[in-house]
Amino acid sequence: MEQIIEKCTGQVIEIYEQFDASHDFDHILRVMRNAKAIAETLPEANMAIVRLAALLHDVDDPKYKMVNHITALELLQSSGVDDETTFRVLETIKSVSFNGGNEEEIVSIEGAILRDADRLDAIGAIGIARAFAFGGARGRKLYDADEIARTTMSESEYRSKNTSSVTHFYEKLLLLKDLMVTEEGKRLAEERHKFMLDFLEQLKREVGLL
Image 1 (tube, rainbow, N blue to C red):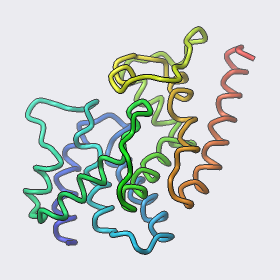
Image 2 (cartoon, one colour):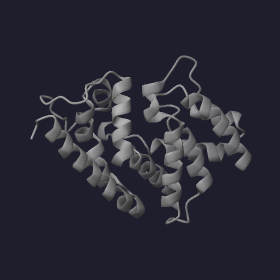
Image 3 (cartoon, rainbow, N blue to C red):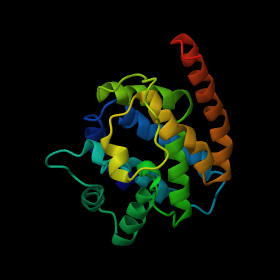
């Protein structure tokens, strides 16, 4: 399995090099580290599944789909992963996306670990950095005092509207703490969530919104 993971790693590095800094290979490495920390509290989890799913979880992200796009399924098959493992990895990846609150049901402990690991990287100091990196790459405003954060939306509505980066905090990032699944994920999310709240208060003071 180590050889398979190594081969898969080599292939995904080339893919993530084409993404902006919010979803690059460093993001994958941080998610892997978060997943390991959570999995240490859940020894029944299959870490090979978690590691492969973490490596591939953004490959099929519709935000980055390109011409001649190679899929996670194709990467697993070309790396020699057996059918059962492939099914479990893809099932785990499905657990990750927020989709405007229209998330998939978690059906495995590996899915719970990966979802929390990915969401931890979306909050706290690194989450703030990633939000503005993504916003900059997409030409989004830093903030819009007149913009109202949506509380309900379809997946297509979530993906199609080019809201400001600060609005994204209220539509997603500040919701993630209460959506954590594992006990370790919940614990790790607390400090990161508080840091975001402190940042937003300071931002409001600096731009005259308080």
